Each structure stands twice: as C-alpha cells, then as structure tokens.
Amino acid sequence: MAIAYDAQTVLVTGASSGIGRGFAIALAARGADLVLVARRADRLERLATELRDRHGVTVHTIPFDLSVPSPGADLRAAVAQRGVRVTSLVNNAGFGSFGPFAGEDPELLAREIAVNVSAPVQLTAAFLPQIRAAGGGFVINVASMAAYAPSPRMAVYGASKAFVLSFSEALWAELRGTGITAFALSPGATSTEFNQVVGTDDATAGARMRTPEAVVATALAHLDRRDPGPSAIDGRGNRLGANAVRVLTRRATVSLMGRITDPSRRDRDRAAR
Image (cartoon, rainbow, N blue to C red; front, side, top):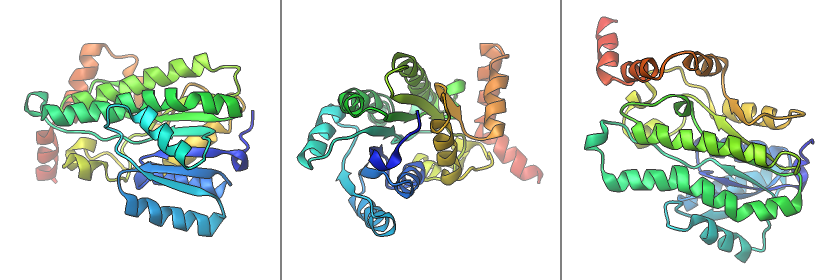
C-alpha cells in the first residue's frame, strides 16, 4: 500500500539532529505533518520553523527526555494535550557508550538501555492504537549495524540494537495485513553527533561515513516498496557485511569485532601511515 504522506502526522524522536532531523526534513518535503521530540527545545523550534516556512506543514515540538520511567504514557499525554493524533512513528532516538564494560558507569548504562530499548517498545505500544485506527501508517525503529554482531567495548549498545532489530522484525510479522508497515532501519557509521556523544571516534572504528540524508533515503525507499520487508540496511557495504557475519561462527564473529573496535589497532594504523 502506497503511503499517503500528506495524510500523515509522524512522531519522530531524536529529531533535533542527525538521522532524526533528516527524517523530519524528508517527511515534511513529502507533505507530512510532524511531532518532533528531543531534549533540546531550541534546536527543535528552529527546525520546526524552517519546515513550516519551507513546506507549509504543521509541526509540533515536544522537548522530552526518553529515559524517564514511563516515556510512552507521558509522551502520549503530551501529544494529546496538543490535540494531535499520531498516524506514524519513527523511533530514532538513541545513544551509545564506548569502553570496557567493567569500567562503565552503571547509571549511564541504565539510561542507555532506557532510551535505546524501553522507549521504542513503550512508544510503539502507546501509539500503535492511534496508528491502527488511522490506517495506512508506519513504524520505523532505528537499529544499527551493531545489531548484527556482538560489539566488544560497546557491549550494551550492540545488545540494545540487537533487541530493536528482533523486536521490529517480530512486529513486522504481527502487523502484516493490517495496513501498517513496521521495520527496522540499520545504519552503519553515519555523520551525526554519535561519536561526539560517545566521546571518541573509535566508536565507529574509522569506517567511511554515510550521510543522514542517505540513511533516510534508504528508509523511505524501503517504505515505498510494494511489499517492504522486516528490515532495511543502509549502504551496500553494510549489507554485504551483515551477510558475511551470517556465515561465521559466533566465536569468529565476536573475535573479529573485538579487533575492529580495539583502539590500539587504529593507533597502529595511524602510526604506519
């Protein structure tokens, strides 16, 4: 079923920068109204003003921290206060941490799990009845290439994205035939604030960066397919990498990832240049 974007009101989390901002811009260009959610109110308002002026769409902004205990119920209430009914959802917000697990801050890890795992589940549960009632909508959950293999030094981030991938693919199967399209989007290294938040470029292991615009284009091209599958991987190299991992043993896979995410490997590479 083709998406009638001009009939959509799409809630996008993590909309103040990076891939979330890219989704907001691309969806507004297609005529969709938006509910933009992120912690940084000033960035949200600037983006909302830009999209209203450029595309004439309705844009609501809700500054919100998704690490709260009940993000689904709280955000649904905030949306209802604005008299808005959500017809589609992009669960994009997330962040990572980098370093040996034994040295990580437990409070930071708990927040990482809340934002990356609990929030997409709770928001999907909270808004799915509205999406179902509207018909013809979609749920896009942003996973990661880290979902396809354990990630030493990013153990919690990789596990959280593996959860998102599994959850989204199961949701795709459950919603078949309902008119709602659900799938996981898995970007690889992308030019966003991810490394800045993590605190090191080692988090992306020197990989060639894709742009947020390219990632969003992959997602919307997948969404516009006649019969979208349960997941979409951005970039040909990333798709090849995901397929390659499937033929390796678990031991070989995690050993390989351990070498890739080892900062000393990059130090040696830099010294050799």
